[in-house]
Image 1 (cartoon, rainbow, N blue to C red):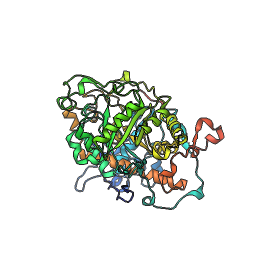
Image 2 (cartoon, rainbow, N blue to C red; image 1 turned 90 degrees about the vertical axis):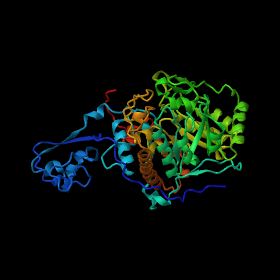
Image 3 (cartoon, rainbow, N blue to C red; image 1 turned 90 degrees about the horizontal axis):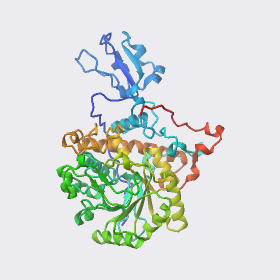
Image 4 (cartoon, helix red, strand yellow; image 1 turned 180 degrees about the vertical axis):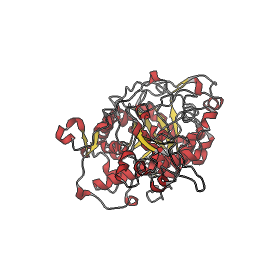
Length: 516
């Protein structure tokens, strides 16, 4: 029976403020000792940068991340000019040169923090659709739509749902309310409060999250209808009851960030709780084998799929693979083995537990893999029976839309959810106490930096901000349903294949010198 969730009410967006007293913004706004505490700045600013409590003589420190910067000069409430004591100074934040990386530059990080805080698109002039990588989705643009295509319809009239079961095999025809769901992050690689917050957000949004290969903590059970159980090569924490909990069971054969290798979890992260869940030894590094040593053919793979279908008669089966050159053949083999979802994971994907030596980005970039698989399964006559999911470096709402236009039905999001929780991309994920933000840690003290409610609301807010972008894009293209966008690569252009005159019509990727 089809679960039609398009009509479900949307979750509420509420302000979820930063956990940190001194937030990071694009600008630095300072108030000098010359301030006479007149309160004019607090009266003038409509963005909430300046505030003061009633019956409190001093103005509070400016909330810098809300400041729209030098473009405020056009307004009559520009605090720098209106301050009678000339006590305010404004400049670009120099930390932007050192924060982030070429795929996730500082402005993209700050923008996603603001979306996660407010549930709205940023008011500050930030570039959050494009990075500085010089390739991949940063070189792809949607063609400029014709003005007469624009649909004057509300967001509520636009269908963004994703169907997971197209096979018509009698199993539940699960429909998600968004064209994406959360990627596998294991208990051991992440703080339990952050993981449970992701599950709570998935339930609110009517989408899914994934256990990763670290087992199924009891905290997930109340949200079981929205939690995928992952079965990976190490079989850590895999039990009959955890397979029966799940609406979807995911076989992880490979990961785009480290194809040809199994999972890693270094000893610093293997606490007594993690060791008990994975039935292993405290402090001992864990390395999953590669591949499944019971699978060396499509027939062996079919035995795996048949096994979980017998254990969980209502569960759908997803197969996650990396993107080798024959990924199209792998996708077809997975379909004939009985999979409902083929999940291809490209080379830009993240990993919160593997050491640097394992992260070589040797898989095919996801923007090449998606159309390759989409076209091949179309030629095989099975495209309408496969739910094709893509992941691996899909960072923002426009990357999601580009992946769908290239041929994916939907995408899996990982790193962006951690950025919503105020990840700064410092790259210390594999270390037990290395995460300064208390996200990718199993240390009980650091893990308490995040509450489940905070993680839930920040992730809900980010996706609701993304939803606004998707709806506006579909309106511009004249679409009422995101499924109309699947495979429409004719709506995309690659900047490298345009002449200079045509290229000038599209926004250029930001060019930024970084200190990395």
